[in-house]
Image 1 (spheres, rainbow, N blue to C red):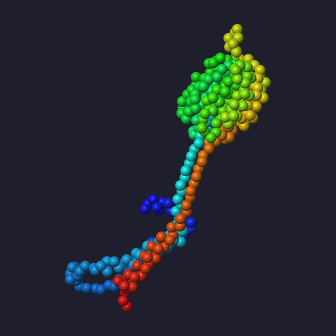
Image 2 (image 1 turned 45 degrees about the vertical axis):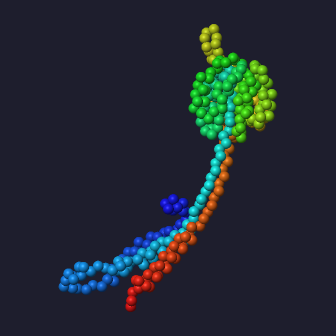
Image 3 (image 1 turned 120 degrees about the vertical axis):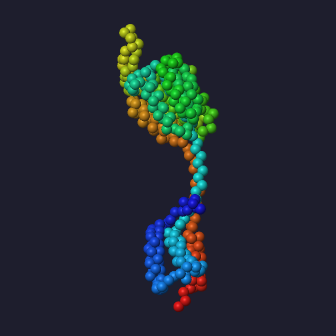
Length: 334
């Protein structure tokens, strides 16, 4: 019963204001009833001690109570009570994402703070935090490529595997094709509605055994979309290098094969981005986040039912009962 009333909404709720008249009517009835009581002065009431009021006397207020109940119900009828019932089926189909991250020596360049690699790692982790419904994996590459973390929904484990990543942990070089191919191999058998690779690099293909465009064609065949990010400022960038006097920061020329990255993106129906600062890198990941929202299939069945009829029927029955009692048992004879 409580659940029933909690589901009721009123189409014309202003009628409920009329309920404040009920206490006023009760007060008026009580005052009037007291004024109508006859008084008689007697020398003693000892003789009336054992007299008990009969049932009719005890229930003499019943017609008024019934009338008030009926009035409340009629006010509710005028407010048009309705119940909305909903059945909602939600089917969240997450997107599978592989992040392919360049860890070559040039990722130590300091045009992004503190350097390209650390900036890419931090922004990637923030991106992961916003993809709660998705499986995400991580591939790293430089002169060769390997899987740092397969597709997983355990994002805490995934983020922890970013920590040990550093430049020089695998053979140096820039094997963009191998990195992309490894990422494709990790996601190609996924049954997700949308499969995505985010490939970030700061260089030009100079090693590896797989051509980047050939890898892009394979991704296209599997229906995998690739977003490519070129990380690094244009012109030159400060980078720590080893010299005879120890490690020193010098300006080195920035070489990013934007043409190849654009071709990979366009081939797979993805998009190419250039990140020249930490802020622009964050914006890129935010844009990818908006482009690749989880697919949510929601079916809502809504039913609206008018509930005033039940209240009206009860009110009429109570009024008929009140009239019956008032003109029979509680009839006041002239």
